[in-house]
Length: 229
Image (cartoon, rainbow, N blue to C red):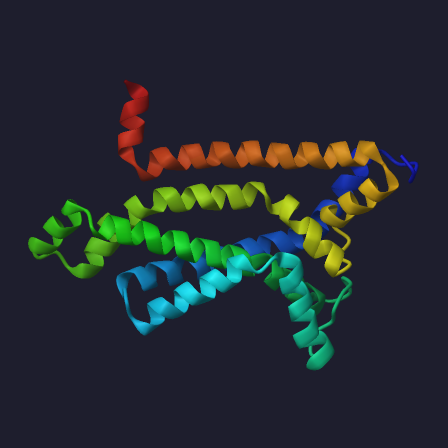
């Protein structure tokens, strides 16, 4: 190791900085992406629905490095209201957090919308509505729990790939996290650090997949019954 320090310790020291970006970014994805997709599905063909679709397409089709540079150009260079890099204050984390979250918001919005539209077309939804059940109860008790299964799959993948997704963003904004450490280590051929980071990413994917599998059984009782037989 070029820094004459244990590779794993170098990685562990960078984890808090990465979590300062990835956790808020994940929360933004969940809080904005899922509700907007569900709302768009419940108001199909409306102006809001079309707006959500357009914003979602723009969000997940623009690469993160392009999005990051655009945000820097707008808010740092043109408006001068936010810093373009570093970790000195909480304001330094706004642009990288937005960069990491915009694409995920678009993906979750599209998947949430598609899942809700598919569920709302099922016979049991029409039956519940025909029996006079309140529309809010139909949505919350019958539609959302069934639509949540494919959404959980996407969220699980996002959780597992948080560190991998931070590589480009941390490099653009000079954020001293695990992602930037990976880039520096690859450049310097510090293979021990690279191996530790890749092992951490793989472990995160395994844990997230396990959590998703457990959530499947909680969301869909039919899966629990299949496992017991």
